[in-house]
Image 1 (cartoon, rainbow, N blue to C red):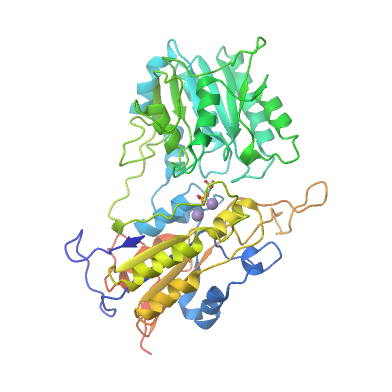
Image 2 (cartoon, protein in one colour):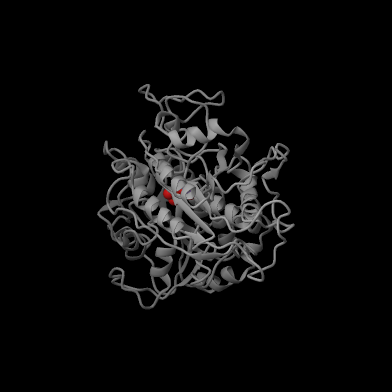
Length: 518
Ligand SMILES: O=C(O)[C@H](O)COP(=O)(O)O
Ligand SMILES: [Mn+2]
Ligand SMILES: [Mn+2]
């Protein structure tokens, strides 16, 4: 969470800013999932007490503004794509707009290059005698995966020799509406039926809800991945069905069921045998482009030595990720699309993670670890050891995904520390979420289900996010420029460099601030 800006010769030289001095501690606070939307009962941020942020907005309007945090402004394919933590933080750190995973996969599929690349060539020999398994999130959320990409992958793979295909489908309900799993499975089953007409033996083999099966992250709970392993690889799960549509429909009949947490299931044939466990000689592709929730499974699929759970059987497979999910670990070693090469970003010096509470639903513990995080950040600021302390506060986002309207915020602790050391603060967010919990029609009116209940929007949003700067170290006359109406998260890095007393490099998106004579 503490970063040092590029200083003389390390790692590249930056010119001194003509008007802003060096040496001030800069505290960067990123409120996760904190967008700006008109006040209404489904705007959690409006409903919650947020005195710190309100004071910034009202107290210094020339040092508060909105910036884009979704769509093309953060390297996503279109402006209909909501922002997310991965692309938001990439833009914040890179200072430039890079095509992100979703877009790189789109390009590789559109040109057909994905089927000529190293990763596809690597798995292809398995098509002769083995099965191609596709594991991933069945969704058009565009955060971790996209359904149309899976469709193109199925089509392309079959045209390039895959004769037996098994899909292991994780239901979403987090980046898309709860209940949409049924429609996605219907569409998938249609596609697979068409492939079967062409002589390809294509079926869904297993599945489950993303938050309960397979897609854990940050090594929070390996049991989630184990449930996925058992269903996808071993063909074992507590629920067995004849086809995937029956599976999601039946499992959703439980009144407490939702797409995010559906239990694991396997599809079995007439004699009760699973139709698609992963065997020696098979090929496996994890088709999510986003890394954080695929890394753990990738480890289980790739590592010879692995002790996080008992794999029971470790099939000899050819495995490729949609992208390489971990550049440092080089994991997986084979991938269908090369990840973005993000260069010359702000330099990370020390990273501290405060582990989440395990096993407590976020809506029951909305404070999460915010207080602990705020105290760590405060101590780092007060130590004066760091030029910059950057902290992510995840509450807004995590509560936003559950649809429960309650949140608290601890930004003041950090701003007080900045005050004490005479520093500067930058407060912003990585994408919207908590400011809108209602699914709406085109005119903005909340949509209701058949019982008249407003449909909960668990996903992120397309809304802009606020950015505020201030603190005793901020030179008088610093204010936001008024000419950058379309600015987004990628403009923040240059802004922060200025606040450290440096000019940003030319290839960065322009700074948000100017200095005027008072
Ligand atoms: O993985 C998740 O929890 C959601 O799909 C996206 O949320 P995030 O981008 O805020 O992590
Ligand atoms: Mn986020
Ligand atoms: Mn989120």
